[in-house]
Length: 271
Image (tube, rainbow, N blue to C red; front, side, top):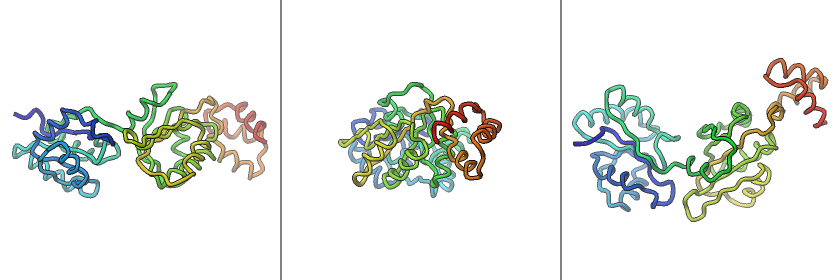
């Protein structure tokens, strides 16, 4: 008799040796494997001699697949969910399905396994256990600055595409010049690269050629307790309107939870 109706199964993010024995056992024992891209998943299944039938499940069809999977479970079938790499539901589809399964009284469990975020931060020096994971950054500069400012006091982790890496690092170097940045590329693979440095130095490193591979980035929390640099855009706009340093300090301190003296000192130091 099966233990659960539905299994969330992590798969390797690069090195196939990270596939767990339990993951292999579950994928062999279930009736159906729900996967993002059957071509990618089939390579993994072939490597481990797993012959279970696959059904596509991705962000474009996840809602319409819910009822089909419910019907299969009602018929006595068990299902495992995998993503192309890593742990499902981490920037991958699955949340809609899991919610509906639980609403309908189906049993769901998740296996431990590979995850790019955990693999990355376990080798990055951090001063605090607190961190924020925001998935992929938004597209525009203003949105990026807004979200990174919002999480100013915590290590902020996100995924990024190789095509957008240099532009994102330019924004960080310009808007948050004192922040430390860590970048993990091709984790667990032959050409794994993990760097921790200033945003400018990281930018210079990756500006030398085409960037390839999956990327995880962390902007380390702001060590400047006053965090004045995060209000740089607002300061510049007030300066453009010819407000004095004293007026700017008063305005910002009255709107945000920051010290008037800290703002004034920042303005004086950055003339």
